[in-house]
Length: 170
Image (cartoon, rainbow, N blue to C red; front, side):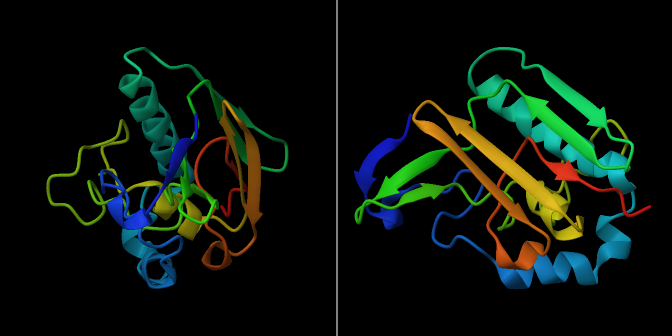
C-alpha cells in the first residue's frame, strides 16, 4: 500500500533518510573504498540483499522466502516474497520509494556494532550492493503496482532492493 500524500520532511528516518533520493557522494565513497566494502565479494552482496528481505519479512511477523539464482553469465538474481520497498506519495503527488539502494543505511553503514552476516562480515546496507555492482536491476512490487529500475552506473539511479540482478565482477 502506498501511504497518503504528505510532506517528505514529516517522514521519519528508520533505515534511510527520505530527504534525498540519491547520495552520489556516499556511493562514490563506497566504490573508492572498495577494498574495505567488497571484502566478501559477490557472496557478501547477495547476503546483504537477503538480509534486507529478511528485515521486511520480520516486519510482517513472518518468515520470508527467497530464491537465489546464479545465471550462466555469472550474474545473480535474488527474488523474495516480501512486501516491497516502502513507497509513499509526497505532497505534490509524486510516488517516492525509500532510497535503500542510493543512500546509506543509518542502522549499519559505518557502525562499529553492525550485525555480522553469515559470512562473518559486517552488514553495511543495500547501498553497498548498488555501489559495488556494475549492473543492478530492481523491481519493486507493492499492492498498487510494480516499478522496475535499472542502472549500469549506480551513481545515476536511485534503484532500491530485490530482486536484484548483479553480474559478478570476479
